[in-house]
Amino acid sequence: QSVLTQPPSVSGAPGQRVTISCTGSSSNIGASYDVHWYQQLPGTAPKLLIYGNNIRPSGVPDRFSGSKSGTSASLAITGLQTEDEANYYCQSYDISLSGSYVFGTGTKVTVL
Amino acid sequence: QVQLQESGPGLVKPSQTLSLNCIVSGGSISSSDYYWNWVRQPAGKGLEWIGRIYTSGTTKYNPSLKGRVSISVDTSKNQFSLELSSVTAADTAVYYCVRGILVLTGGMRFDPWGQGSLVTVSS
Image (cartoon, rainbow over the protein chains, first blue to last red):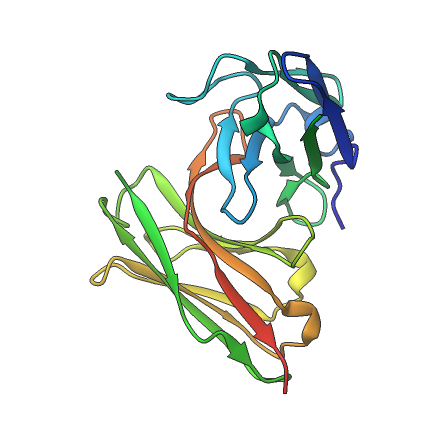
């Protein structure tokens, strides 16, 4: 069971802006643990997209951005492109139950 | 550039032990900067962290796996391994080995990931 909740799906036309929320609690995001985001293209392994709440690894386009506030975080994709159609997962650390690294429920982004 | 590659049986019988290896290339598993993790993903579902190991052999596991998991490291072969005992159909998933980088404020980010190994539990 994921302790980080994401919307199952979001969609947008090419060029539009979409956002994905990641809702946690006081034992994970709200406890000031960083949020990281991963992109999983169909049939492939996840790839680190954003780390440390809002830092893009080298090679990740600047149309991807992250933010965090309180017990939630968000991933924004501006200028949506067809190749952005994928599943996206947030991830953090949870101090309950002896501590564990936790992932969000995942969001499918569809480019209309 | 570090690469990770999983290997192991694709089919395991119920109640038996699932075993997978992960070979690390392009970097040393003995580096003090990283932890080595296993993450799994049932078909069509989300990601679940299984556990991690440090080069020293120190481990941390997901409490939800209730003592069924063991991760070991072989620095001479630059690889680490996963064992999951008493498997059931619910353990059928793609298993990924992943390098973990500790974050100063706590937690860990995962990068890079292996390509994944599908393990099916069935008689």
